[in-house]
Image (cartoon, rainbow, N blue to C red; front, side, top):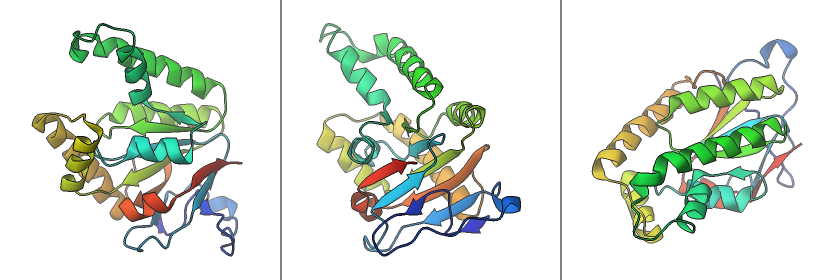
Length: 217
């Protein structure tokens, strides 16, 4: 695993993009750790147009907020699908009853966006490894690579984020997310990325706040 180099590169004024890697090394997964830099991080990340960018982190860590702010025209967020359904069904109908329909609609929409060929930024809860495997296959099919953005936010901050948005998850579900996301972060730190993933960027809250946009080129 190479550190501090990735398929994402800074385009901030005064920070030139890294030189192209030799052909024999382009398949090596790479990690870029932007944590603990007090916000002194790139304002923009750039990826290839065929890439699929997955944003993972704890519920309440700020995934949806980040995606909508830095890639509004490329975002695919299951929360958007849920909100559309909530506007159509009776208010008294529990979400658990129509959740399978929301998920089916989300994945159908995601599949359509992937087949369109443009770069996308996908919200990922971190617990569904089969989703990342599917996205990695789709990225390869269209000539791109799966890229991972990992939000490393402590559980207390994530819980506060849930309270602020007025929507939380159960203690059991949060524990599952915490184990899954913690595993992703620890694996990335020691050089192990999910299968099919070409690079990862580790972000803390300050680094995520400093990002302005994701650009596909």
